[in-house]
Length: 636
Image (tube, rainbow, N blue to C red; front, side):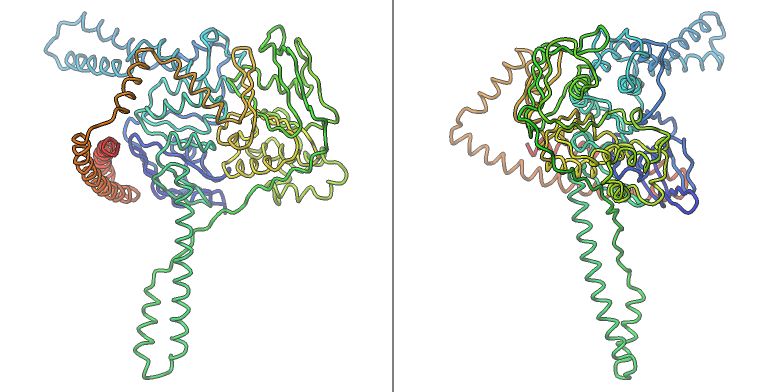
């Protein structure tokens, strides 16, 4: 368990986090949301102890093991994929070595009745217990499963890490964290370097993870699938909602509306009361009433409306010049780099006005194909044809390598802007949330989200009729992604996009090209039919026996029942309904008790009270989970 108590973090006159209180219980899955720069990543570093608060405390259960994945980190370059991954078991190998040491000592000693001999026996048992918990199956088998889930092929396990991209090295670091089996996972944008298939595997992993998770993500679907609680950081305050992201958005809107309504009602009441006081202040016959109302106003607890951060990204692409009907076409195309062929026999046709997605595992050729399309890379075989009057705008995935770190925000745009736009550069930068002194910042000091916004700003300086975007939503917050999506939906040119963000692609693209096993397959109808196709592929791997069992169950369920069975079902339905209502009441009561403990934990009187409340909190959470399981079973 982790408790953040009355924590403040300030730099000079600027306060990033202001007297925040958060309690993270065992097995809780929490989404941490808010705009870029709100303090989400900093909060994870505060919990880790990498950053010290200005005031307040953070307490953790003794021995709490935390696994932390930051957005950026260093990577080993002198190991293979498997060798680096196996480092996750260093502590396990140390335990095995300790068993060898203890066994050797016990074999040499004869003081069987001494305390030191007994202590060695106790330690031996403890170490063996820890090993049995960590070593449910051989470490190498565990590593293979996780690496495969995260997208590595078995023939890549012996590949040197120095040959891998930052994204693939980040997957190795994630694998090491998962294999170390921590009590709590702190994950900062873990899906940025994962493809759709790996994200789906990771979702299932987190659902079954026996520990707590505090997760920063700008992937709405991923948050909804993996979390049951949402903590929002906005304008240095935190707001806690015990629901997944999509439900949080609804509750947040309702809360703000109720708050504003209550505030307006109170203000009207105050205004009328003050009018009465002013009107009858000097009338002796009304003096008692006047004094009574003055006292009532003094005692009144004033309703305050939470401040909202209403700054939003403004994106509008210029009208697209007309191109030919066929914008890009390839026949029997082979793509790759050096002597390596990534994919071959690629037949792709992109027509004017189409919105197309390239999807598939990382390394299957999506970005390579994009570089062929924009003319940055030569083909390895086949033919490619660019359409008539195509004016191309390109957003590269690796903006930190593309943008000049020595330029300022303003000069980056100034160097790219045609003459007619130069007078409007500050307005354009303001639309992309670069205001005041922000425009003089060096690119080198910008965050990932700021660099993404700056690169996107460059794309609206000229009227393009073909936009090629490679992972444009990495590092963008959810609100900015929604605004970009709306702008792309209104864009009247042709769009080709590489993305793993399922929610972003849904309703945006109308055709999908899947890169898999050296081939490219076309899927019509957008991202949803493609995801259904992926799901079908998974179902096809189910054993025939399981399929047959499922078929029998369906047949049994579909058989008509006679009236006697129907009457019995009616009684059963009534019993089930009563059971559901009973469980709902019990769960509500447990929720109330849990909230009471959370309030007490936010301002504990002593460390002893923290430990006592934490035990009770854990007990209540377990009881609530059991009741919830029963409720789900009863509710059918």
